[in-house]
Length: 124
Image (cartoon, rainbow, N blue to C red; front, side, top):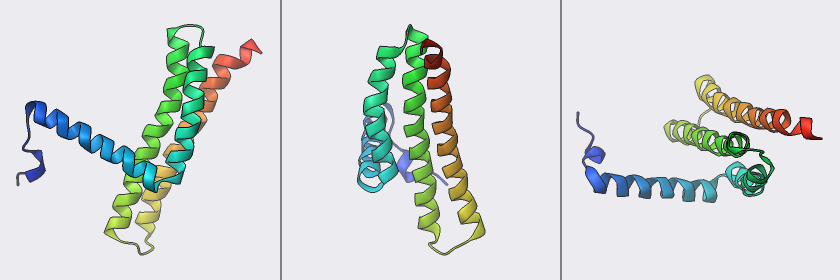
């Protein structure tokens, strides 16, 4: 079966994708406390990482590790939204899906912490 939402091509597809992405960011800002908190940290840590990095690679690792947290948080929020759309009832598989998403966020936060420690701790 052909998806009726996949008909656009060329520039129209690019414009639609940009609009959907902005809609997703707006929804995350409106509905996701964790995303808003992580975005505030990102606003501080990305410029700090760009300033503290000794070269392009260090800057990319410091800033990129922080931005990765936002990506994973958005994916986690998407999983939670789909699970809640299917059913709000308690179910073992729904809990497992949400727990997997939460674990991914935790690992991305830990990865960011490790990157920052490995790169900046030797300088102290």
